[in-house]
Length: 123
Image (cartoon, rainbow, N blue to C red; front, side, top):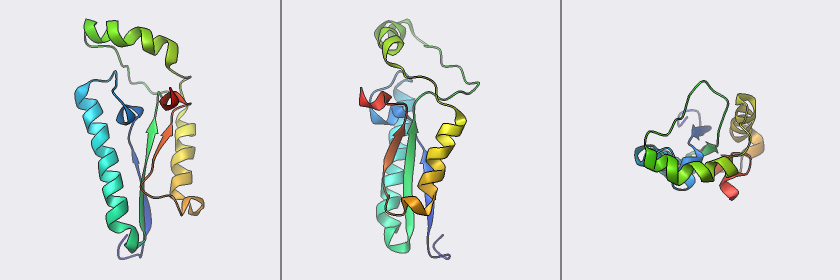
């Protein structure tokens, strides 16, 4: 990208990167790290024409199961999640967000972590 004079990067983070998460401490910390890498890249390479953003999806229709791995987590977070999780997004909805961030229409968007979570992060 530097040799080409610029470009756009979109990292895929998670709604877990925006708050504490039912996914556990390690996953939540890893997703926070993705956001930090995204923002650092945006700052360090903006003068070179490189933009870096991240998408933070909520639940997306995949074949990945997400059971609680502890009774404690299920007891604390289960009731909250049953009443607050938005409808599951399609892969196409997430792809549309990523495609927009990569496009020239988002040329002034840099260093953003954009929730694509059906409003879940607003709760």
